[in-house]
Length: 433
Image (cartoon, rainbow, N blue to C red):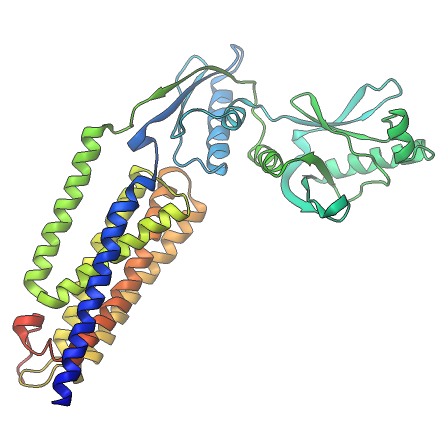
């Protein structure tokens, strides 16, 4: 009697678990899709036409294309389409609506750095340029600001030749004007002990030099955090070989069209539905548990995409679809491993744990290398390969987790209740000794 009541309680708990899972999936289906950040493939965006000067060579234009791609990727714009269109034209497609001023600067700014010293007339004598720069990094400090407010810096680093030129120039400034203190320079406007930093010919900073700079680095301040990060990106992606101008900017429709997007969605939905029916036919209740695990992992993946503001492109969607397909493969591996351990005429429970443990190890062994590869691509690759890796890793990790944890707890609970003792319910045909 006591055992019967315990089994009833377990089955009620199983029903609650399924109800909660179904509620989570339904809430995701209702609230998440409208909040997804879809890219150019699905929603369209801005198309920008850039023009190089007539004297620019084809090599210069191709180099500009590669720099623009790096800049857009570094600024978080997913899968921008950038191509040379002949006659010095570059076409850029962005999933941004409309084109922002920051993005416009990233596309057209040459970002040519130069550095110099002020002469007695206040004119700038350039002594270093972008050819000596090896990179930049963002930093912030509150040490020298009133009220503890952050001051944002971009620290520019020079190569060995640049370091020597910088060291010699700043040492000469200190030796030539020893009595020109910072207070006196600010009061009189005398800039002979200030080091000029120019971007595309315009002065963006002129820090006072209080000692010779031997480190090979110059700290540029006076920016907001966003401006400093943008300058860091521009320096690290390199200067354009020629000036580009924005000739036109207009809005365009989805890259793959509404018809093909809908067709792809329904094709994936049909495939998953047929696979689910087949799984239910073969594995019955355990198959239903696996389908619930897949649905729950998809819900978590979509919630992560919204929380992390991931742009969903066609490549990202392919990553999602592949991970969902692999979830069915994991379901089959686990159930087949359980079937291998069950003996006809014997209770299921003593053999379930061993079978599930074997299946879980197989799933983890197959899944973990894929996770590592996807994460490596997500951090190292660019363009559509990176978008695919982000979509795959973001959906595959929950798939791997729920395939083992959710399946394991739910099936163990069902086994304890005696619900899976009958092959007609479990689909686990026992082995005859």
